[in-house]
Amino acid sequence: MAALLVIFLLAASIFRSSHAAGIAIYWGQSGNEGSLASTCATGNYQFVNIAFLSSFGSGRAPALNLAGHCNPNNGGCTFLSSQIKACQRRGIKVLLSIGGGAGSYSLSSANDASQVANFIWNNFLGGRSRSRPLGDAVLDGVDFDIESGSGKFWDVLARRLKGFGRVLLAAAPQCLIPDAHLDAAIKTGLFNFVWVQFYNNPSCMFANGNANNLLNSWNRWKTFPVGKLFMGLPASPSAAPSGGFIPANVLISRVLPRIKTSPKYGGVMLWSKAFDKGYSNAIKGKL
Image (cartoon, rainbow, N blue to C red; front, side, top):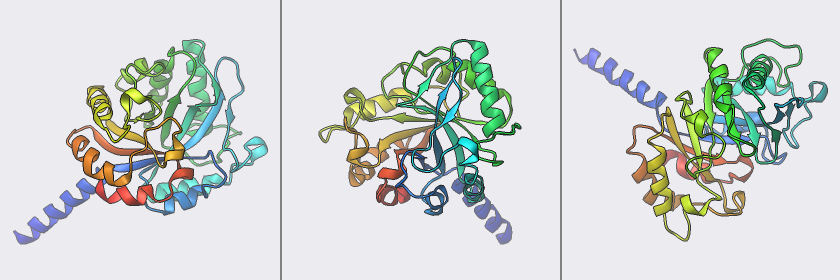
C-alpha cells in the first residue's frame, strides 16, 4: 500500500511539472543575444519563438529574417537544425514566429492563406521541401505575431495549419480588445497559447506603479477561447520604448498572485532574448 502511495505521488508530481507555468521567449532579432542552443541551455524557457518569417502572402516571396544570426539564402541558416533538435530534446517547444512589427506580409484571400499554410508546413513543419531554411528539424508550431495589415484570413491560415495535424498554434495580440488583426483568428478556439503583449499600450499595461489597467485587461482576455494565456512583457525597460516594463519584484508580489488563479494561466512571455539580462532568472521560480 505504501509503495502504491509513493507511485501515485510521483506520478502526480510528474503531471504537475509537465503542466507547470513557464516562460516563452522570442529569439532571432539580435546577433548579440547568443545562439539558439545557448538560449535553450539556460533552462529558463519552456517555449522559444524563432523570429521572424517576415515576408509572405499576396504574391510575396516568403523570407526568413534572423537579423545578425544567419542569412537564409543558399542554406545559410540550416546549421540551426541541430540546435532546434537540441532544444526539443530538453523538452522545449520551438515555434516559427510569423509577421513581426517591421515585416511585409498580408493575406489577400482564403486561397492565399492556404498557400502560405502549405509553404510553412513543407518548409518548417512536418512536410517536405528541398529548400527548408532551417534544415530538416521539424518545428513544433507557429506563432502569429501579426501587427500590420488587415484582420482578414488569419483565421483561415490557423484552420489550415491546424488541419495538418499536431501543430501548436500561438498568437501574440496587442492587449487592446479587440485586437486589430487577430481577433477572428483567436476566436476560432484553435490557439494552444496566447501571449498577449501587455506593453506599448497605455490603456492596458502597467504604468506609473499602477497595475489596474493591466489586470483589468487580463481579466477580459481570460474569457477568450484559448488553451493557455500568457502575460507578455518586455524583459527590460529598453525592450518597450512606450512602456509596460514591470520590475521583477513587483511582478512577483503584486501581479502574479492575481493572475495565477485562472485555470488558463500559462506563464509569462518575454520580448526578447536580447533584452533578457536576468529577468527570466528572477521570475522563473515564482511562476
